[in-house]
Length: 336
Image (cartoon, helix red, strand yellow):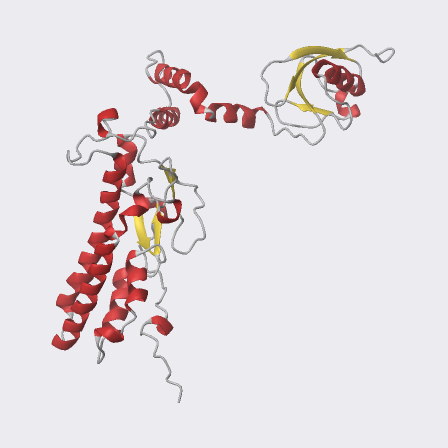
C-alpha cells in the first residue's frame, strides 16, 4: 500500500457476475493487482470502472472516489456500460426469472396501500402481458385461452394465422374485383374482369399468400421469426421502423387481437394508384397485353406490401407511381 495514504474499501465484481468482493487499496494500481489476483486474470491491460455508469477509473479519479464504491474489473478487450444496462439485461433473461417477475409485478399492481401511478401501472401491465407468453405452444388443446372466439376447425395457431393473412389478401382481391362496376366502357370492363380472374387463379394457387403469417413456413416465405415475432417494417417512406415496434400474436390472446390492428400497407397505393393505372392501361388494349405479374406483385405480395404497426400506417397520399416500363408485356423483337 502507498505510504501515508489510507486504504479505501471497494466492492469489486467481474462483468456478468453478481457476486462481489471487498478489496482495500490505496492506489488504482494496487486495486487492479489485488482484483486480478482475486479473480485469477492477467493484469495486462486490465482496468477498473464504476459499476453504476461505466466511468473508467484513472489514478487521479481514484483519489476522489468515496469509500465502498462498487467497481467492475475488466480484462483486456472487455467493456462495461453501467448497472442500468446490466440490470435491464438481467430482466430480459425472462426464461430464468419469469415466475419471479410475474409474482413481483402482480404484487405491485395489487398493492392497495397507495395509488400506483398510471405510467407505472401501464409498464407493469405490459410486462405481465409479455411474460404470460405461450408462444412455444402450438395446439389448441395446449392453449385453449388463445383460441377463445376462434372457430373450432382451427386446431393450431399457425393454421389460424395463415387463415388470418389469407383473409386480408382476399379482401384486397375483392376490392380490385369490385372496381369493375365503376368502369364505363363495356369492352374495358370485360378485359379488366379477365385480368382479375387471372389474378384470382394465381392467388388461389399460392393459397392467398397466407404463408406470410405462418411461423411454420420456410423463413423466405414468412414475415415472422420461427417463434412468431413480427417486426414493423416502418412507414411506406421509411427504410425501417424508428419505434422498433414488434409483436408476437402467437404468445397470448391479447397479442393476437392487437395484431389485427397491424396493416399490410401498399407502398404504391392500391386505390389511388395501382387500380387506376391498370384501368387506364386497358383502354384500347386487351388483357393479354397487360403485364399481369407486375400488377399482381404490387397488389398482393411483399414487393409492395409492408407490415406496419398502426402508428406507422400513414393514411395520406403516398405520392408513388407505377413504373410505366412494366405496365405492358415486353414485345420480343423478331430478328430478320
